[in-house]
Image (cartoon, rainbow, N blue to C red; front, side, top):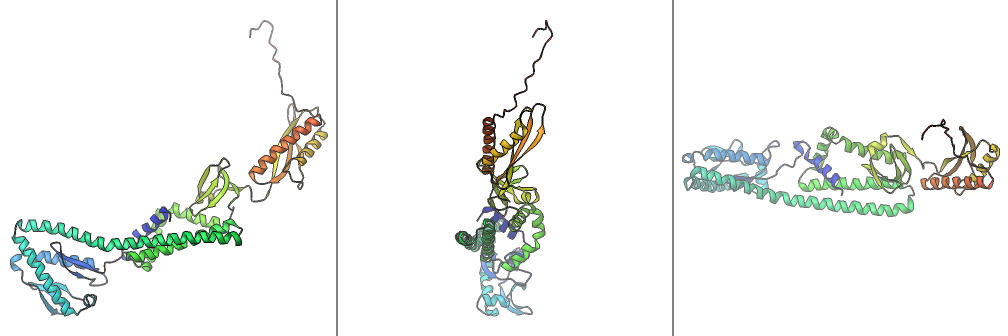
Length: 415
């Protein structure tokens, strides 16, 4: 997969609203950096991480007064089975907590009460030992940071690896299908532009599918991500307007087809053969071999000259004769010579017109029809010039002499 497309897809994911983010299903409650127990979300608006931080703040407040601490107790209250310390409710066991731990609310409350009691005893000993409260708080902050980092790595790294594997598999699948379509289209579709359109749409559709599968592997809800991307479309439209403009213009160029792959076109000051129409830029090959990438938005909004839209193209060359030459004979000689030149078509037949009357010569315009390809057009024009010069020499028709002027100076003037 191209790097810009990957960056764009994950930027879309990163900028979606908060509700699209993967919510933590389970979070660890820590006391002095040590894991005590794990909780799930308490409500639809409070996820597991927020609930765990709220419990930790309550425990931190209790540790400021060690003398008032009493052992944790699991008791039934109006809100359900609750673990209290010194009469202060610390955590209420929900039905989901019990189901996640495959037990009942009362049994889980007692289990959490025992774990919390052991953690409070360790915390008390730390604060009463070397370093006192300051040392205990410092060690607790460091241990909590490293503990959460290890927990995040354990949770995130497998998901990232799974998502990366999914992306690579779908990328390989997209390339394989694009290659297979190329083999099939060689036999059933002769239009290279239609082939390019179908292959690119198929390729990006498979990548988009792989992206949403990878989103699911990361722990996000694909449906919610899609909705979130739609909600942020306006903002992204402004931020990525050039990228999106080139993308849409590329689709329109492939569908409307003002030119096809292999055509020789002129876009602004650039001229060359169309090698590929991508969804971001059109690839042109200049006649001197250089490659030009023109943004699709620029191509779509520019005036385009398609030199090969029609297989035939009219060319013209000029020839000059003197005023003492028989015009009718010269015109007929030039017309016959052009007709016999290599590459000139018999129909429409070549034509010769008097184009201009100069001061010392008459300009003849010889027009002819040939293949519209640039190489054929240039070669045929050269052959017509060669044939006209040879025919004029054979017929004794002289070309105009250079204008020689003599400057006479007064006698005695030094030069």
